[in-house]
Image (cartoon, rainbow, N blue to C red):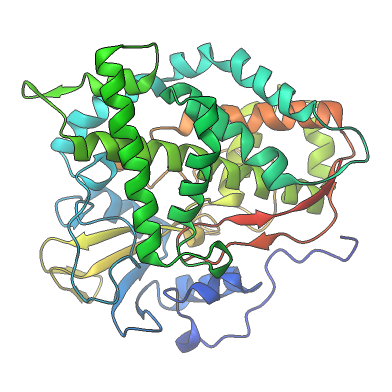
Length: 413
């Protein structure tokens, strides 16, 4: 880790060689530079899956992403938000009929119920609990220990928090973590799953959620799954499909994205040691700006998918009904029109209008407040105990078009 760090090495790809549909593209060290080329020269472009010839439109410009995100009447979420799921069939699959795969007004009504557990007030009430969990996890290690930061720290805190919020028995959490890894790692051979097996893992999470919700209807507890089980829309309880879908969504999103942000943050603090010194000197003063910069830098979800509900003419491109769209936060979060020196990790950056929580509109991330708090508290507790903690090897990255995951990062405390 002593080599000079070049955060945006130049790309060796010509513009016609850049294929955002290829999961191997995202393992390249120069993918950010390739995204810069696209944003400058071809901000709206068509990309095809390497093994099927089916494809999708890509939007990489910040302002375009804002427009697409807000125009849910043309760019719909109800057919799913992952552009690689049905690429082999050429048919757009129906969505799961859960909040993230709905459009207003149905989405608005459902979000109102589920959001109760994630308001700023609720998250503030949880701060000491989050801190206790972070302190407990960090306190299991000693100075000089060499650990897998992902497995030993970054994956544990958010999984514990979201499972506690949902009311999951501690004995079942390793099982759900494995299912979550399989769901989101369905393009990575190290997980040993195919997209079909990833779908089965998602279904297993949903089945667990349906069973837990039924238990809570009979015996309510002070947890979010009890709230969700009692939701009524137009006087009717949610169908099992939606109950299970909400559970699977909250478990997967509540642990994977925050785990990814924390791990990328650890890597960034190693590569930019002056930023770690700033954080250690004033963690409270830098609470919000540090968390936002870590989340911008990480961009845990590289894109979200949409499907055209109607033919649309947009900036000289004819987009046809039924075609898929990918809006690439991985590109917009390095847009120099919005971020001065975008390839610098700067925990004092303000304003920081990143799109890691979405580009505005109805699907802004429900758990944003909780994610910010977990990221900040974890690094405060970590560096308070281990100020010299640093990565000692390069991260092992997840092979995925959508998730900017890190499977392993060796750290010396």
